[in-house]
Each structure stands twice: as C-alpha cells, then as structure tokens.
Image (cartoon, rainbow, N blue to C red; front, side, top):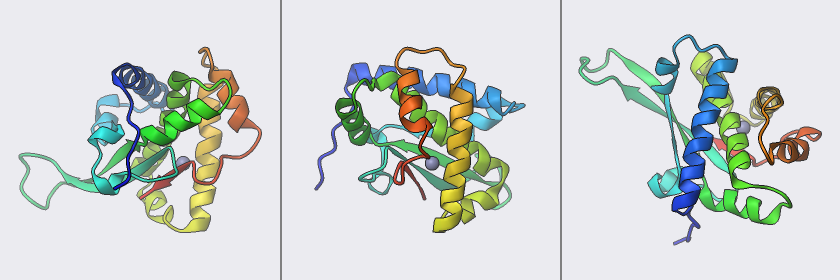
Length: 181
Ligand SMILES: [Zn+2]
C-alpha cells in the first residue's frame, strides 16, 4: 500500500487557518448571501481523514461530489449535492519542499481558494459539475477557476503569496493541479 506523507500537528494548524481565510475570501467575493448555507455544502479534509477513494496520487487536491440528505427530513425529499475538498498532504508538502520560496501557508491558501471556487460554481450551476468530467469542458472550467482564483488573491497581502501567484499567474493552470470526481 502507498505511504502518504501527512501534515504534522503544526502544519495542520497552518492548514486550518489557511482554510478559514480561503472560506472568507471566496464567500465575500461571490457575495454568498448566506455563508452558513454555503458552508453546509462542502467540507475540507486533509489526507488522514480521507477514505481510500478520496486519496489521489499527483494532484494537490480533489473535489469529490456526494449526494447528501438533510437529517430529520423524510427520505427522498431533500437530497442535495455535497462536495468534499480532499487535500493531498504529501503532494502539497513535496511542492513546498521543491519549489523555491514556496511556503505552506500561502500555498494552501492558494490551493483551497481554487478548490472553493470550483465548489461555488458547482453549487450554483450543477451542470458544470456534470460537464467537468469530460476533458474539454474540464479544461475550460479550469481556466475560469484559475482566473477567478488570481482575481480573488491579487489584493491579499500575505508573505510568500505574491511568489506563488507569479509562479502560476502568467501561465495557465498546470494540468493535474487538481481532480474533480
Ligand atoms: Zn481546478
């Protein structure tokens, strides 16, 4: 079985903080009228809390879609789509280690903003999620999400972030950045 490098305690804390800033930035940008509602449509997990099928080798993260049901509501009446952002600790740590100047906190912020932009678009337009499984629409969706991510993060002043935006900015997002399931 494949061994995955996991975030340590201190790294988990940094990741949690980056996730909460990412949530705030994304829900402000899209003027989500109810951030509570938005938050009930997804969660973000690191590798230790992922099921086998939520782990993937290569991408920094993947978004896995589920059909969920509200508790306390009769069966069949209230199915909704739920998305799990599955962070791949090992791949993220490898990038931070190998790419000059990359730091964990701003890099995770970058990755999570990107994934949450996908989630917002999926919750607003379900057909995007369905279409994203074909190659061409997936690439088109990646380009849009990438552009929005840069727009959201450009005004943010955070040590180490400018370098990451510069790394990804000029070129379009790398194939294999993430995976949508
Ligand atoms: Zn993406």
